[in-house]
Image 1 (cartoon, helix red, strand yellow):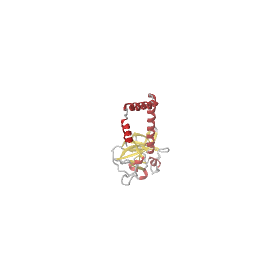
Image 2 (cartoon, helix red, strand yellow):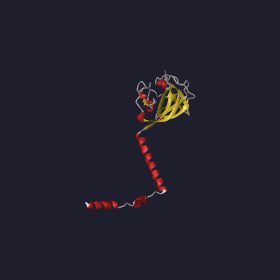
Image 3 (tube, one colour):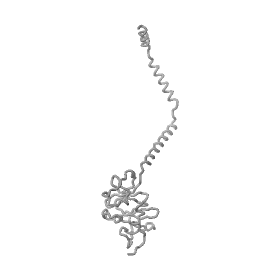
Image 4 (tube, one colour):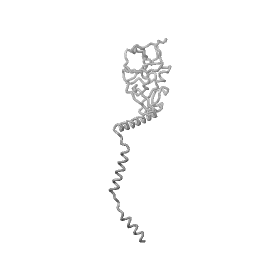
Length: 213
């Protein structure tokens, strides 16, 4: 019993030099920091590398979430859009020349910098109500490898990017346009037309020739 008490007494009597411990910790910390401290140039390179890595991550995310660019326009108080790679240009309607004995949706032709271009009223082609601006004066020229024509609209609203995952199938009650010509609808009810289908449809393609009645 005396031996145990003596041991406890000796242990309790031992004092801790906290100042010495703090000095040792500070020296160890300084030694760690002295192993490598980046120069200003090295710091810039590190930051640039991190920025590049973040940019690559963003591009990878955008690749997973595919987007399409569209030209949005108004027609008959409704909002429509078509992929921008089918749109060659937009121009004001001027000097329209009617062509006799052609389908009712063909308004006529215009001379666009030496090129004869048909102008289509898609309200008639899609059997939409003839409402909207009283004087339609904007033409969107659609173009593919083998065909081009102009589409008369009320107004061109903007160019926008739409996430493909957000495009939903069009329900019959949501638009009068047949689903054959639609890629779908956005959450805010913009009907996206299928430009490739329009430009390849024999029912809408019209050669600039006068048909016999």
